Image 1 (cartoon, one colour):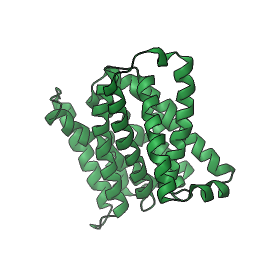
Image 2 (cartoon, one colour):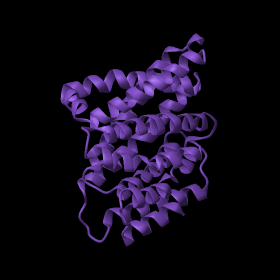
Image 3 (tube, rainbow, N blue to C red):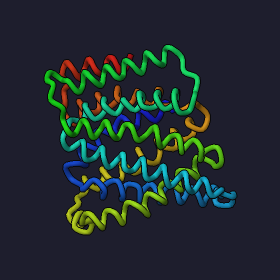
Image 4 (cartoon, helix red, strand yellow):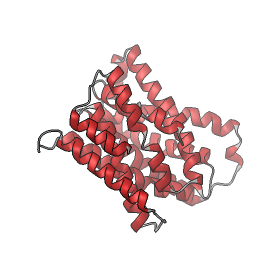
Length: 269
């Protein structure tokens, strides 16, 4: 699980970069297509296709694909109106939503330290949103809504992982993602024109996201999710914002404001 935040620390950076060059659904859809081929090859070579897959795994995987990829699209849209640092820090509110779902819906055992942690993350999000004024950026609100979707998807992912391997669940997730989001991109956007205008940097960004974030980090995430409670896995993975701040400084030349830094410290604690 610790490998996940290191790689996913790049995710907000990719989102900000991609929001300037790609339509949101196109970027998510074709990055998922890259991940689909990668997992498809592994799925066949590993012989996972020989194992019986219950119908519920197909159903849960389709739900996870719809929820998670919708969240990615929202992040792409929101990143266009906010900074990479805000995107990284506000995504940490996923921990708060995971805490609420774990405590009240899943009835998982939670300790006082976890409760304090969720409260600190919430205070950190407030500091980031405030950032010296009481005005609320629409991009920040969209990012927050995406953070709510991921713990919901993890509930269905965990159900699927109780009946199938992480390789199978991921392959099915990306299969459904391709079937849903590529037609959606053709329906609402103009992917042919986008592909015709792409340069080497665009391809590098798309393949980096598809291979690193959607493939390698997700393998690590699902292996951990299969073994550990949702709350614990979310807490460990949420340290990605620490890496995001470093990446934002060096790749986007963003220097955190005092409020962003306070929000980061509260969340990190």
